[in-house]
Amino acid sequence: MEIRHIMHTARSVTIEIADGGRYFTKQPIELRLNGEPTLTTEKTITSLFDLKPDQKYVVEAYVNGEKQGEVSFKTDYEYVTLDVTRFGAKGDGEHDDTHFIQAAIMACPVNSRVYFPAGTYRITSLFLKSHIRIELAEGAELKAFTDREKFPTFPGMLQSYDETDEYNLGTWEGNPLPMFSGIICGIGAEDVVIYGQGKINGNASKENWWKDPKVMNIAFRPRLFFISGCKNVTLQGVTFCNSPSWTLHPYFSNDLKFIGVTVQNPSDSPNTDGLDPESCKNVEILGVRFSLGDDCIAVKSGKIYMGKKHKTPSENIHIRQCLMENGHGAVTLGSEMAGGVVNLTVEDCIFRHTDRGLRIKTRRGRGKDAILSNIIFRNLTLDHVMTPLVVNCFYFCDPDGKTTYVQSRDVYPVDDRTPQVKKMVFENMDCTNCHVAAAYFDGLPEQKIEEIYMKDISISYAEDAKCDVPAMSDGVEKSSKRGLFARNVAKLTLDNVRIKGQVGEAYELEGVDELIRR
Image: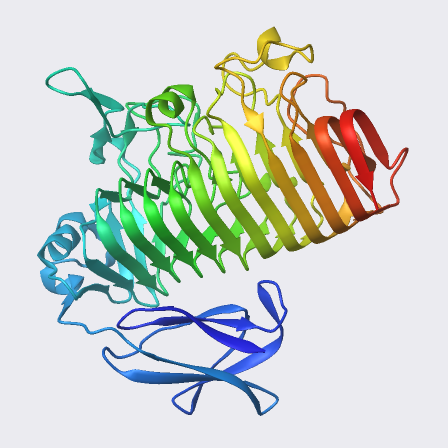
């Protein structure tokens, strides 16, 4: 067992307990802080709060009274604490505390924190600034209003005075469109940490934000947490729930950390993705628990206008020790990925009760910059995932999604509208209680999936397996206990891939140029 330091603030620390477990430790771990018993945990990524600034600490890990390891650190210096109740916030669940909290944020000096004691703080949009620390104590809840008229509106695009450039603020599903500002919102901020044991509640329901979800009413629905053009932003420990739409949406932002947070939305809530990094670079997602109504993590880079204009992929995304439950896809790439997705690794995670594990959604029309490259999934546990692996190059999204151009399996010319899927690696995956299919890979005939490498993968099916479609495109029939389907793949390697209990052939291969089996 190894104990690793992940991060700390003036008041908190996150450690990793590397005992071979995925999200959960293999056995309960007792943590002692400076020799004092503090917490018993069963999570590989664990945070401790209520520390003191500028102090040296030692965290020791014990199993059955025997020490397994330790880690030392010193908390950050803190100049002053700004308690929001001293600025007029009531925290009584009734009064609008937005202006009082915003005053505390704007007044906060460097090396200081804005502090929320226990209470329910009603808010609309709060705007972040650079060099700030915000702590939500246990029992503190930021609970949003749902009156649209209370929220600022972000225009989708503003033209520069000399008409040579554009300034993008609002965004909706990959296009520059008007939206309500995020409930927690940052524009051009850097060096921001939001942490603690509290909750940020979007308060959405089918009586407000989730009613007629596809209709733009004044503007498109807000995100619960939205940052644009930001860098060095960290979320630690906080719970996010009942988001109006996508929950955590970093947009054209870099150097981001999401550590030990929880994302909870009802399973029938519309478009409530958990975490959607869009055209972001250097993103670490560690120890996060998702349970929601859409994709748990959806990595994006815009539709074709934004992809062609900015040519900004999402790149260097590392997802580790996470638990994804009850979503459509555990980790999804696309469908808004016109700028591409490069260097994404998912490891040591658990996917359970999701429709799909990996879910790649692309289509003709995303553009030549829509390149997926160096995608790695390894050391994963999947249970009751309908179809563990899906690469769908005929995803029928958008108004033109069911046109002949998008859905035809005929060979079309490769041009500026043609996306590309390059190398993907899947290793050491244990998939039990699958339902629909083992895997479904459907590439474009004119631009085949370049390479799929699969090694040490075990797939078995639930006895009461449900029947459904493995991918959302025209002509895909419902199935149950189907094997691995691969079409239009240039190179497919199957190394110790075991499929047990399928109905029909274990492997259905069509248009696979090179097959390597070991």
